[in-house]
Image 1 (cartoon, helix red, strand yellow):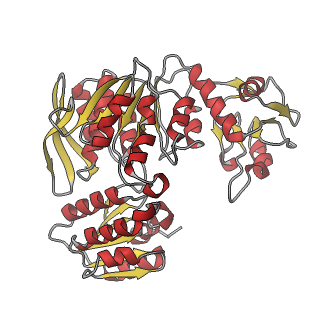
Image 2: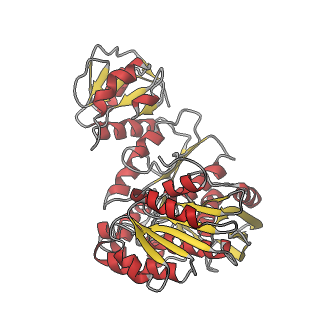
Image 3: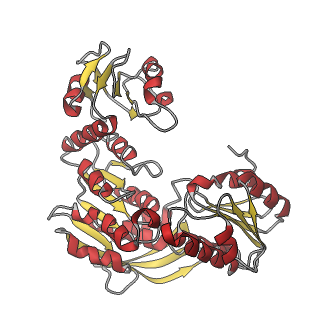
Length: 457
């Protein structure tokens, strides 16, 4: 981060120094919310959560070397006391961006594929200069500013993932770090119950192109009608990516290998290049095209874009992690999260990887789907039933719509991931393939841990 004395931090956050804090003491980073990660020069942010209050760990952080604590009440350690810690964290991140005149902020949003696209784009911008991007999916009101605060005077690109949990959320994140380029992937059915409909989801996602300046670029998916409509909501120049002929950056001659990895010709306004992805699933093409379009707008040559996309491996855990065991069993761990669209994509990939093999799946009912929850979960069951499975385990709460949709398939309900892992482990034979996919709260990554020889945690 940019080194900041406590006096400046107090000024930026409208805070007051307490706990014998030295106004001249300098925070050099990192800024963190986990006291166990504190180190000399760091700033500990005391977040009050549902399970723990960060203020209770302030002394531990300072003992480990933290210069001070950003807190909402006076403490017996050096601290900057503010009215609201999360707001102060955002203010501190905004001040950092203002001190980075040579850095370009790129924002990525969409119902599915944000993290993969962010990872690909960060790899591409890394060819042009020092890049900061979130680890995993630090995309909310806490993770977003923490990522921004990792930037320093040498940073040239900030590639940020913006999630929408409610209307106005993306606009809020965009104010923290105003983007010059905004990428919108798609408008799907994730969080349908929170927003009430795809039109409302589109309204929320469209806050990213709305936030762009007149000299910015909106990178929009030409294949998604909800995203196409966002062209009317931005003052920025629009560039299109997708599979359709009208997209300036598009995929041609698309094909899948026997492992479900896509290859295609990347076409841009200035030429073409061949891409062979190491990522699994046809849906990865959309993410690659979005990253390519943004990088192309930043000036990266098409040959370099293709080279980097072809070399990219999955960066973020539990997203289409494909592992072959020594006995030939293939485990597809896509357990980080799930929505109706990503469920269909995952089963499509299972179909390719599982051709002429016995196929199994462990899934859980999808959440946050509102009034359409039963209907959409029944459709998940139908998708699973069409996959030709030898066995389907539906884990956890409210399994009945999925089981109803999977009628006729060998589907059973189990109470938790441990039960699914035990039953599946007893059934698997050399050459089988198993898909593990569900909402994050279901904890299905534990199934993969067991199947791959680790302990479930």
